[in-house]
Structure formats: structure tokens, C-alpha cells
Length: 589
View (cartoon, rainbow, N blue to C red):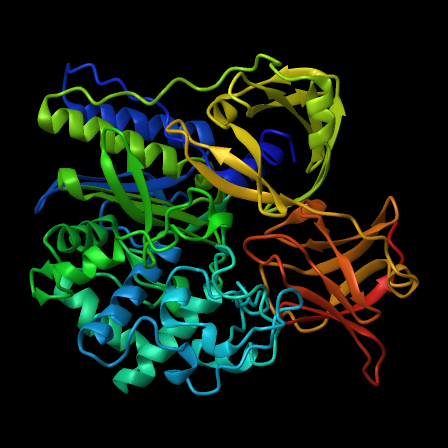
């Protein structure tokens, strides 16, 4: 896979991208500009189909489909086409929790275990001296600060999945990744457990609770948790239609909905929690969900988290709340601008949509707002430019090993620049005059390119306490954590003996991983998953031996703090990771 399709796309997934500037011309129909932007985005990123809805107040001003819902059968995408909306589901789960709070059935700061019998994670490998499961509250799960594991990948996208009610057993005794409220770390498991709790409190299956209490009063007629409806889009990867797997962790991401469904959902949110069929949640509770919850957590930097909803403050647009979603072959987003009574829904049916949705949705919102008000919207600040405004000594101090959501990066100084090998390509980071760096892709290892996908990406380094973080800087100057510097620990003899390739024993139709390898790199061990979601060793995770039977994946964020265990069985030693069991098949070539 090329640098453009792999390294750059992965870098965008790690750090995200700021919304490009929009300078409305004030001429013509803004809807035509929306169509032009969407079609251009689909073409640039090879996305097969998409649906868009734009809401102002209680009116849907724009609702259209683009491209194909089923290319082979020439079925076009429309505003009524059903997409897997992924983690947007989490906002409905959170509203179901807040309804219980409103009724007095629980409090956000209650220990979560009081409301879900059997919830009993083990202490984290690091920082667990004073840890107690009672410190994990309902609030901490809703804000991705519980510290529990982020995922159980085995059975996540598969022919045979785990029921959401099984996760309380699946994570019992599994070490937490960190103490509660240590740092933000996205957790699908947390919202799966919240959905299970909602079911127990209501005495009704989770899907029926959400349908009765959120979907129906919000006026979402085709939203469903079932696959196979006639209006369902196919899912695509590299332009090829793929079989849609079953999706585990249902309350975290299994809702299917159309752009029109989510337009109705957005109208309910903009109407203070009241839908066409009744009250969903009082305005005061929505305000609570849209209030920043993590301002007192230093390692979060400027990451802005509400209760399930992500927040962002724009100088011109004011508060933005919303959520994105990513499942096998579908990438989606919805954004709400409460101060402008505006919402944007963008759904795509291609894995390649990940490089498109956030920036395009904000562009569409700006264009719509300018068209509605007749007033120009202030453009974003200009992207940072490389100036090499740094000394060689300062660059040398930044060189080293970092664990990021992209995996293990080794930054190497080259004069006044930093380089790293990423997924088979080379990235070079050049300093700006504001103490940050901008990335270039080095074609053939020496020709610098800064394509549009990287044009507004800017990273920096900041020490917080004893930790040195890598962050992304937005055009507004906000810093979002992207990684942390780590001290490499040499591999132990027991783990060096396990270097090699491993086949998975219990993955039936799993689309996440189909094998692992343990590899040595300069005396260090890397754990390298392989499979449809991370092919060709693109995710390399630095590890640290805690014992001869356990590796820790150090770092901050999603799935950092997880463990890899060597387990003796009558059939021979196995490697266990995130629910998978694997057995060695060879030494690594």
C-alpha cells in the first residue's frame, strides 16, 4: 500500500485534522456549493457513496445522497439509505443513562459496580497501588476516563460475536489500563457496559429501551439495530463491496440509521430534548452532557469531553458538539452548533471515508451558515509553515521513542528535522516559528511532499509532570494528545525466545486481526497485530516485560496499558491478547 493510502491516512487517524478554511463568496445557491464539496471529497478519497443532511432549527434544509449505496446493482445513495453509524450510537446510550439520572435511579458519581453486578476489573499494572473498582463511576465511563480496557477485539467484527451482556464477564479480572481519571482513553467496552446497566435498570432489552425512550420520540422512523433492511447500503474498501460482519459491543456502535433519521435526532437536540413524539431529555440534562467534564485532567491538554459528546469551541462558530463513528467499511459524523441552531450529518459507506468526514462536515456547516445568514463566516487561521526555526540541539532533545495511536514511532534527528518510518514510508517533521512541527511525506525517501491531507496538521511536544506528550495543534491553538514519550526496556530472554509469528486459535470470521507477531527491534520487543484492519504490520506496539509471562503495552490513550500474556496450556504455550488466543507457528522471517 502506498504512502498516500497508508502512512498519511494512519497519521490522520492518530492526530485528526483541522477544518480547512471556508471563505463564502455570497454568490449562488449555497446548496450547490454543498454538492460540489461533497462530490469533490468523494472523488478525491475514492468513497463510493454518502448521504448528507443539514438542519436549521426544526427544518431540514438539505438532505441528499451521493454516489452509490450498491454500485453493482446501480442503486444510488439517498437521504433514506441506511448506514452503520458506529459510535454515534454512544450518544443514544448516554441519553438513556441520563434519563435514569433524571428519574433518580442513579447518580453520575455513583460507583459503577453498584449498578452492574459482577463488574470487577483488576488493578492496572501501573498506578494500581491505591486503586479500587469503587473509584470507577458512571461519569468516568461516560467520559472515557474509567481506565478500564478500551476494547475486546476478539468477536468485535466477526461471524460469531459476543453479546453485549457478556462483557461484564469478559473483562472480569482483566487489568485496567490506568487508574480512573488519569487520562482520556476511548473505550468501547465502557459504553457496552453502560448499555447493559441500562437494560438491567429498565428490565427490558437495551435495543427496546433505546427504541422506546430515544428513537421513537425523536422521530427516527427507519433507525434500527438490525441488519438487512432493503434500504441498507453495501460497505466498501478500496472500491470493493465487502460482506458486512456482525458487530459486537452493540451499545457502543451498532445503530443503523439514515441521514434523515439523524436529522430528526439533531432536531430533538436543538429543540431542548423534545422530539415530535415527546420529551426525550430535559434541556438541563442536555446542557450537562454538553459541559466539559475533563478540565482538571492535565494529561488531556485541551481535549474537550462532555458526557459522551465531544466538544469543540470555535472563535466564530461557538460551541460544536457531536460524535463520529467508524465500523467495518462505514465512517460517519454528526455535528451540532447549538448557538446557530444548526446541525450537519455526513454518512459514508467506504473505509476511505475516514480521511474525509470531520473536515468536510465542518466545511458544509460553514457554507450552510453563510448561506442562511447571508453573512461571511470567519476563515480558519492559515496553516503553519515550516521555517526550521529551531536549533539542532533542540531537535536532538526531542529524538527518541514515542508510543502513539499509530504505534511505536522512533523519531531520529536529521539536522534541524525529525524523521520516522511509518507503515513503509518516511515522514519528516519540520519546525515552525511557533515551537511546533509540520509533517512532510518523503517520496522515495528524499522528495518532500505536503499534500492537502497533511497541510493543516501541526504537532508539538509538551512536558506535563513527568510525561512528555506529543500533541496536535488546531488552527485555534488547541492541543490534543496524540502520544507519549517512552523509555525503551530491553527484552528479557524468556520473551526473546517467543519472537515469531502466531496464528489465532479462536477467531471465527474476525475482521480485526487474523494473526500476531512478536518482533525484536534493536533489542526491544514490538507486538505486531496483523489482519484486515491493520494489514502488513502497519501497527507496531512497543512493549515492556512486566514478568516472564506478561508484556505491558505502555503509553496513553486507547488500548495503551493493555497486556499480552503467555499462558501455558496442555496443548502448548499460547499468547493471549484482547480476547484472542494464539499459538506460535514460526520464527519471524
